[in-house]
Image 1 (cartoon, rainbow, N blue to C red):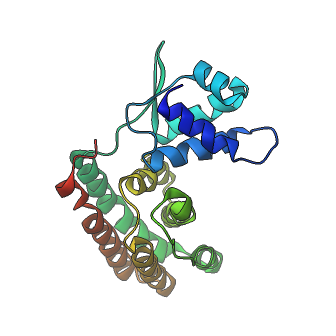
Image 2 (image 1 turned 135 degrees about the vertical axis):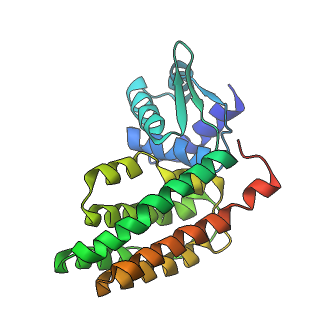
Length: 234
């Protein structure tokens, strides 16, 4: 049994004593990838996982398909799945260039178009997450990552351009950025920046909303860019 599969088996053994569902496998494997317990390039063979974890192939296949959709694993013909690489510096820069084109525009459009129900949804999303992660692990940051994704997706939805929204969703950008690093108070700073965007949208000020979103994305880029000065994360 490989070290990676030992880690998987150990994590799954801690799950409730009932039939292991694909969601359990998915979240467990995702957490191990996000925390770098399972490193990029590690092979995840369905037959081996089935034997070693003592469960059927169905939840394993379903979870690996979801992880492939997330961009966290890559399916290779006749070889199974392997864990994908983290973002490179070039991919990181491309992702933020893309976001700076799309998201400030979307925030401005949301400020122009949002009605009372839309603003209530923004307020509810901001109230849905108020905790501050207490340790640098994916388990601690998972709820923050989910809020981050929902918040940015909602702004794009309120902008009214479904093509732009679906394009943004396919990047899974928050998942891959959190894979690079989480900790150091980034949640508190991001929540404060989200609040500034929401305030501008609620005021119906498209220029202020676009500026607030641009400031948030630039601040996020600045928080994460030093990672590439320390090591190559690919």
